[in-house]
Length: 294
Image 1 (tube, rainbow, N blue to C red):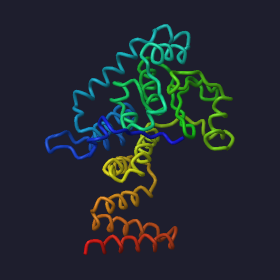
Image 2 (image 1 turned 45 degrees about the vertical axis):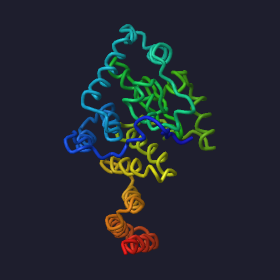
Image 3 (image 1 turned 180 degrees about the vertical axis):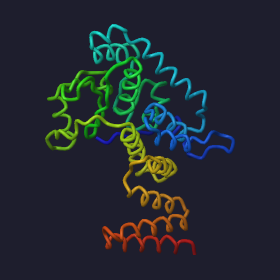
Image 4 (image 1 turned 120 degrees about the horizontal axis):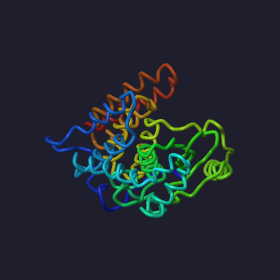
């Protein structure tokens, strides 16, 4: 199942990604954080929300950070000795605080925005995992994120031990066999050890943005959401080159034919060396886009 979401209410109705002139430059701050020596995962996710939702202020971002700190302060200090991180976080975040997911969350943009997930206690697996990771990290836990196909979970301790929990299910403990079953149901293939590598912040944020793009793709009336999600992904140090072509297509879709055609032609020059036939096709599409100017 692809992780994505948005509904008919909330910030998705106003998510133009175009802030007023006097607003903070969230995109610049996102780019700076993404290129930091140690990118802050929570801040990156909160900045995605700030680009998505024009009502977000710096105070709102600070409040979200404070809430993560507050939750971390509720984790029993003795957990540092017992090592029962998964159980304690499930009791706190799942049972007491009510963080979990339901199928309807896949249809809401708020489910991909960290400040909204903290407010609603609902979200996609990856955003709920971000909450768990950030709370656990602040509490001193050896936590990591695991981006299994179709479902994101968290792990504690040595990744080889597969001490996993599913925040979407309120923190249900997972075994290696559970992970294998999850991968098999999502892909029809066996679990590969490469899938068990802890995810880096940049990869996690790229996956969040991919989910937003996946939601926007079949909704042409929300191409604005797809465009800012692609543009933020392009600010990450590591991203698929094809995103540049996707941005060009979105520009054309939104009526900016000249800019879209120009980016298609630039991408075609890149493709000349690896796939000349695809480059020719892209140039034809660029010509068609320019023709729509007449």
